[in-house]
Image 1 (cartoon, rainbow, N blue to C red):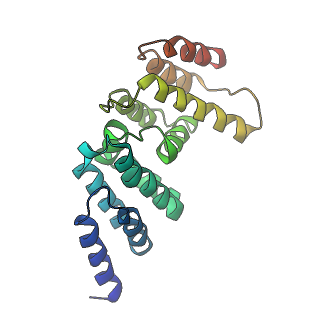
Image 2 (spheres, rainbow, N blue to C red; image 1 turned 90 degrees about the horizontal axis):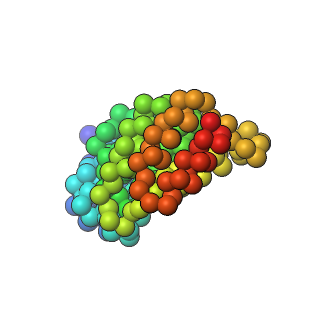
Length: 196
């Protein structure tokens, strides 16, 4: 066994023995990602799924989801996107259980799927957001954040003041905006119709 392999095993054991609120978890996962990116993603998935019931606590979610997402994305955004595309359990933990659903890096990831017309993948994530069981999350506000991110990213990328979405993108966003209960619904539906 090489020194690198021993270090990977040591990090896996340390991460596996850590609690979700342990501030060292993102550091250990970032260190593991430098040695073995896939293994780091697997350990992140393990932690997120194992402690999914703890993710309703904003501090735990920030530590276990936001900080790790940022660290892994900073290491290799392309590899992270590939891993996420293949990991339904991790996506479920991020978007259904976590207090940080549709914020930070995971919001940017979702926005990228929408803007790149990966409608099926984006729709699956929007379904997860719509059933997020965290009592601290208001679905209408998360949909507003998603629309803001999509519109702002589009405008910045295309150097325009008004976004333009294709029919499939608009229909998908409209479908999920219509699921909102409360005053935010009409506002978001109107915004989508104006650019569709």
